[in-house]
Length: 151
Image (cartoon, rainbow, N blue to C red; front, side):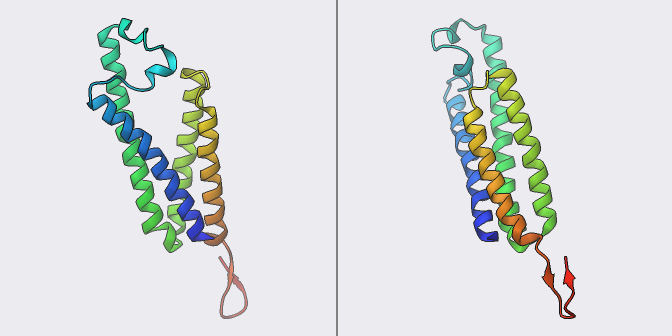
């Protein structure tokens, strides 16, 4: 079960890296942050003041770079520590992912009029499934040589 859970969590990591990387590439190519189209039509975007667009593009660049770094770090954590049944890695990843998911839901509701809720539900499903499968193995109690149960 641990390997299956680690696979699901690894997929979650890369499913977040791909759109963040694509967004970065669009901005680097001179286009505006893709999130703008969630609030404005293609015709409205050119009417936004250039300083505001530059600020949005700058924040999107920073955020997407952080998403990439966070998800790759989580991927390495899963492959290097979680698969070795190191409990600390489970706790660190689970707490970090919980905070990230809660903030994503709040941001979606506050700034994007809940347009990403379905995507967030799928993301949360990956996390719950992956963590559930891993927890079963990492925290299961195994009998020791004296017949008692050890953590």
